[in-house]
Picture 1 (tube, one colour):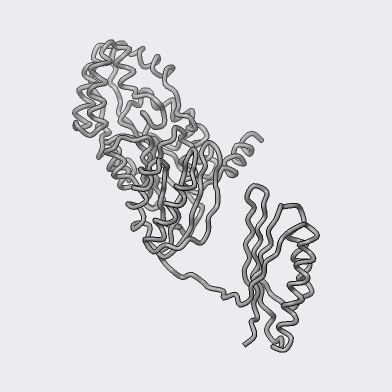
Picture 2: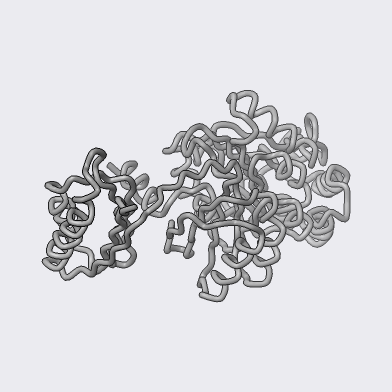
Length: 403
C-alpha cells in the first residue's frame, strides 16, 4: 500500500515570510494539512507540517505527487536558507487520555542536569511529554512541560524530591479544560505579600521585640497554637500608643514582585483576597493600594489612643484562614478547583491544603510538606508562571495599563 501522508520539518534562522512561502509552494498540490506546529527559540525556527493526499487521488499518482511536494518545499525553503527533512507514513493520533499534566520548572539559573532529572522522572512514572516551551526568562527561567499518560498526583512526590535535590521550584498541575476564567487567589500577608511580620515590628517599637519575636518564630514553625501565641504577643503590646500603628504602616515593604502580581491578576479578572493572622489596622491600607477584592484579618483593640492588648472579634488562626478561603469562594461563586492559596507559615497549612493549588512561598518546612508546590525565589510575581501566565502576557498587561 502506498503511503499517502508526509511529515515535513523545516528549520533555520527565522525571518519574515518563511511560513507563507512554504505554504504558497504547497498551494497547487493535491494535499490537505492534517497537523502543524511552529516553534521559534532564540531566533531559530522549527516548522513541522503533516500533509495527506486528497481523497480520491489514484494510488498511481500518489508517489509522483508526494515527490513533487518535496521538491517544491525544498525550493521554497532554500530561498530562505532553511533546511528540510521529510518522512512518509505519518499516523495522526488523537490522545484521549484523561490523565494529563503540566509540570512547570523554575530556576535561576536552570541547569541541563535538572531538566534531565525532571524528564527522566516523568518517563519513569509512565508520562509522555507532548510539548515543552519556555514561559519566562526573567527574573527566573521557567519551562512548561505538558504531557499525558500519568496523573499529576503520581508525579507530585517524586518531583518534589527532584525540586529539593536540584534546588529548583517545580509545580505539578492538572491540565484544565479552561485556560482562562475567574480564579480566586487567597494570599497571606506577613512574610508573603510584605517582607515583615507586623507584630514583630510593633514589638520592637513598643520595646518588647525579643519576647514577641521568640513567640512568633515558634508559632510559624508550628510549635505553638497560633491563637494562643497571637494573644500572648498582643498582650505584650498592652499600653503602647496607637500611633505606633501609623509608624508600622510607613515601615513595611512589599515583597519584590507583589505589585506586578496584583496588577496582572487584576487585569486578567482574577479575584485577590488577603487573609492574614496580622492586623486590619495595617492591612486595610495595603488592600486599598493593591486594589484587592477583599481582606480578612485580626483587629487590635484601641481605646483612648492606646493599644489595649486585646483583639476584637474572632481570631483568624489556622482554621480561620481555611474558612476565609471557603467563604470568599462562595461569595465570588468560584469553584474550589479555581482557588489558589499562597502562604509561608504553619498557620497557612489548612488554607493551602484546601485550595485547588497551594503554594508555599519561601515557606517554613511545616508548610512545604503540605503544599502542592514551593517557590523559593524572592520574587512574588514568579507565582504567575505557575498559573500558566507567560512573561510576554505580563509585559503586555503592564503596557495595557500604561496606555
